[in-house]
Length: 277
Image (cartoon, rainbow, N blue to C red; front, top):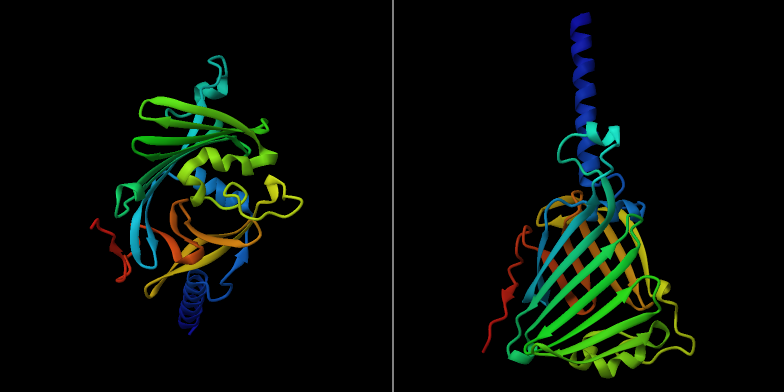
């Protein structure tokens, strides 16, 4: 009798654990719970694999994006006994991180085909130290450079292999950049695109507000545990990103039904490549 009672108790305990685990995995108990944004950023910066995504607009594929995060490290002093005892290949001292972004836009005509290369240098405190973004539409290219601690933005325009002009602008007067950015100014939101601005422009640190949560992503009939990051841009544009627990980008949605979808996710039936005519 005692043996049967113990067996029944163990079975009930095991069944309860399975049910609780299933509810946690599917998010039935708490579909959305706030989490620190730094936790998500840390996972993204330490992701071991790159993120490869398709750029879609209303189900039509416009291009691809490749996102690679890497750790910048330095070796400690050779006379440090703790460093000498550390396992071979282990990251010693993190000096910062680097994000490389490569976007290719197909386009129906040559003037719609772009390649955008971005490089972000981030400190160990997750603060942006330097950013370079390069828009290429052969034979021309535009590059924007920004460094932390400097209240200036540098814009370089190239034609082939020669530099046509290079200008610097104050962050407090970004609207003047429109004439130097050429056709790429139309791709950017206010204040660089010259849209109507309030009498007192917002400070750069208030241009984007962030909110992170632990929320599942529905893929077909399944739910995938992800980190969800919602961003409010310039007080009127909303973007939502789902990041895997390993730090890979899975899906990012933007206004007007623009979407970045990871190639590891099933392709929606409506998605189709946009071919040249």
